Structures are given as structure tokens and as C-alpha cells.
Image (cartoon, rainbow, N blue to C red; front, side, top):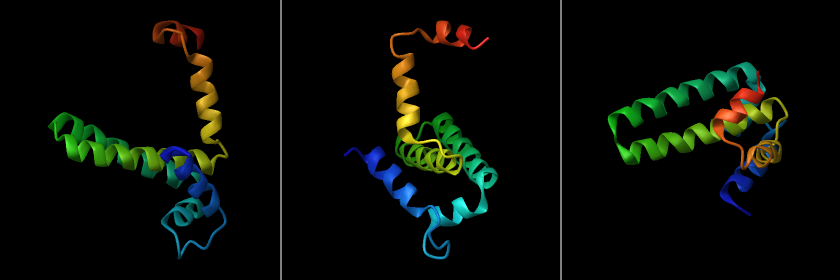
Length: 103
């Protein structure tokens, strides 16, 4: 099992858990909007570290971004497998072509 799979399983197991015992359960209990807000905050922090060029800080912030992205997805019942399936669907398609297909 990969780190992302373990993280997804942990987040799924926190759904409906006591918010006083788990940060993940607390975020999920606050709802999808709060999860999205936290994801946005973490993304901004990662952007700041990318601009500063601090590799270690960017790595740490990137981990926070991935965690909060996965919590946000879980809040809307989107699984890691759903995202991986979408990435598989796009495999071999150029980014330009993929963007054109959304129009």
C-alpha cells in the first residue's frame, strides 16, 4: 500500500469519528466548505515556499496540500481511486488537447 493509499484509508476511517479526537474528523465535521478553505490556505503557503525557493519548506507544505486536498475530496465523497481513474483517462493526452476537450 502506498503512502497516498494509507492516507486515503485513514481519512475515510475518520468520517463520522469524534471531532475531539481527530483533526481530520474535525475538518470533515465542519463541512466541505471549511475543508476547501483549509486546502486553499495550504495551497497558498506552498506557493509562497515555492517562490522563496526553500526546498524543505516547500516539501512540508506540499505534504500539507496533499493531505488537505484528500480531506476536501473525502468531504465530497470523491475517492483517491476516482482521481487516479481520471489521471489514467488523461494518460497519453497532451495538456493542451486535454484543456481543449473541456470546452
